Image 1 (cartoon, helix red, strand yellow):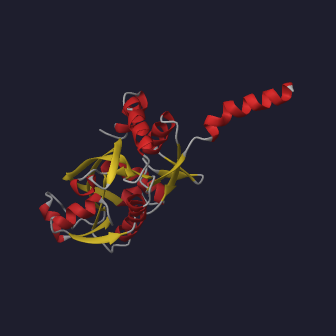
Image 2 (image 1 turned 180 degrees about the horizontal axis):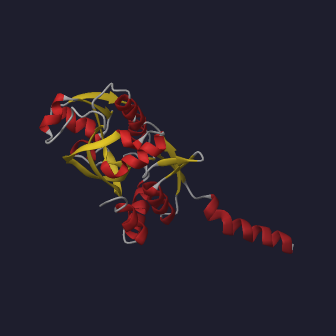
Image 3 (image 1 turned 180 degrees about the vertical axis):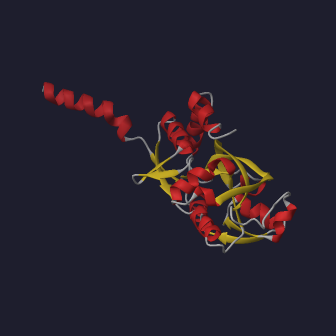
Length: 242
């Protein structure tokens, strides 16, 4: 009887953990914020997202996809989350926005050997062919402004086009180029940050599909408010910032 009582007590004590909801979270490869280590999604922003979910007593099943696919999954699939996504007027009503989990200062990146490319203004870059990821904010903003863009499924494909000379420029954060080169096995010395784009300085958010359980949204927003005051949050948001 005592063993039975112990079993029942153990079962009820472990019940909250067993019932802890697991939610799908999608993202793209974007070192050092989102990386893949031993088949597990890791990185600075990923650490922050996991902390937010843990504080909300929720499990995060984080999956890595090309950005276009990740965006469509989060847009169409209920109870699906995405990071790190820029908040824009066009996107705002399609998602719930939990909070900022990354900082980006994007610009044009060229091959170091392309000495013929010398960009001194945003407008000057319009003469070049630029690879951008489909559904990415950079793709939208550059297209709106009349740049010549080539759409790719993810940042890896954009770097491949740049390295092979099929495009002149790609878009990335100056402070993340080294991490991206290391992740993709590229020679960093061949990459040169050519010019910062003022209209592509942004925060990356954790966001959720509009058909997500409101209890999860409230729990995560409350958790974010607590995490935002933590040392971890300060460290992540200034990662690799000058």
